Length: 181
Image (tube, rainbow, N blue to C red):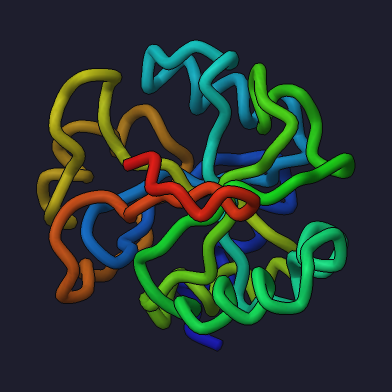
């Protein structure tokens, strides 16, 4: 484990927020079960809690409580897209209101970005991963842009680079299969 990732994960455990690279954009991350950390991200982004936030994991098994509620064919469809830049709205009861917003689903993804998955693996459960931007502004695409805009706001910027994807992940509803974004 690199010193940078160790530092990032320790900050997440301590209730901090970090900025990290993912598939197509830079993101903010924190512990989804830490209300204060989530509130900080929402304040930085100027995003209402009602919209909810995406959580990422290192493997589908970290979303077992949600995936277990689906038919085997829906589950297979979802797992075929992971790892990758596809987010699924999964039925949930374990994620708090500050994560799901006004929804009964959680936006969940196993990213195709190795470093992002490694952070979630080291953290041992899903983490928030939402685009590093202020609401309605373009997300950061480079480490230097993330540092320039948010280094003084977050607890740590993890050195890295985005993968080959362009832009935020696609979002699909797990029950209906309809594309949301």
